[in-house]
Length: 105
Image (cartoon, rainbow, N blue to C red; front, side, top):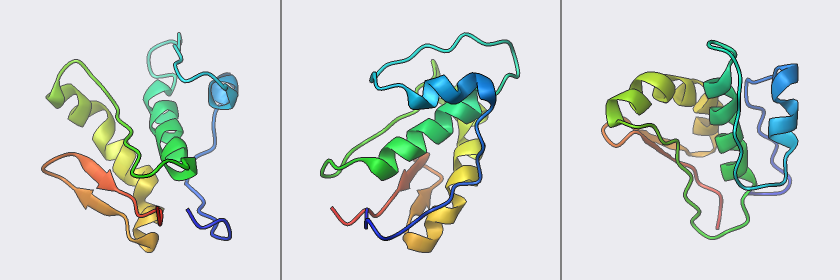
């Protein structure tokens, strides 16, 4: 991603998820009550990691037990939070449930 370009995603983490976002480990486990915002936190962590990656053609994924569950649980949230990325050429693919983000790598 261009170092001079700033992209603001419409997300402000809840206090209980700040340590999740600040972690340095690759893997994490969140234990939180129903409707605490786990999916929202995970989707935004995924977007941030994709935007900050310095790897060539990186891939990131949200995984659920079933395709339909992933679509029902996270796809609308992902599209909503990633909407500002359309300004830099991100392409949303509804049939494959994927977003291609142009990072210049």
